[in-house]
Length: 122
Image 1: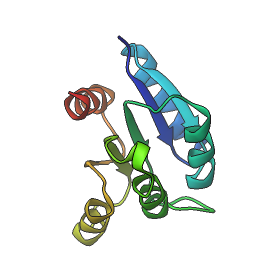
Image 2 (image 1 turned 60 degrees about the vertical axis):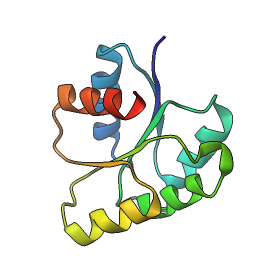
Image 3 (image 1 turned 90 degrees about the vertical axis):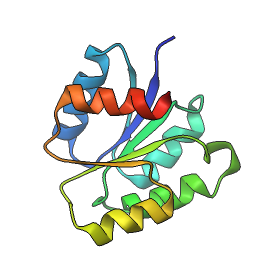
Image 4 (image 1 turned 90 degrees about the horizontal axis):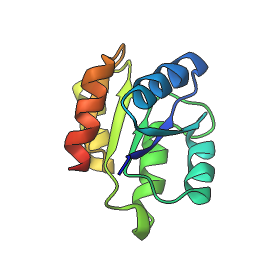
């Protein structure tokens, strides 16, 4: 069975790169442009196997998005990987405390992203 992943990033180039990495590995990619759009897409789809989110986004950043996802019972167990240019330890801790499962710094290696997704989804 193919994995379904929601990727949330305000950069169209990054969304395209993530989609290419996922679809090349046989993973179905659902994309959103920021945290608000990510919540809208999440409501319209079967709950994904995992979520990838950026941190720095307009309207609703990654921290707010993670908080909103974790606030809903039906989404609490979905692994969330943060994919961002940020690497500060305090930001990693903030994301972890909000409920993020892992942290990957951009630019990313497509094979490592897919490997991380397979690890967190079991």
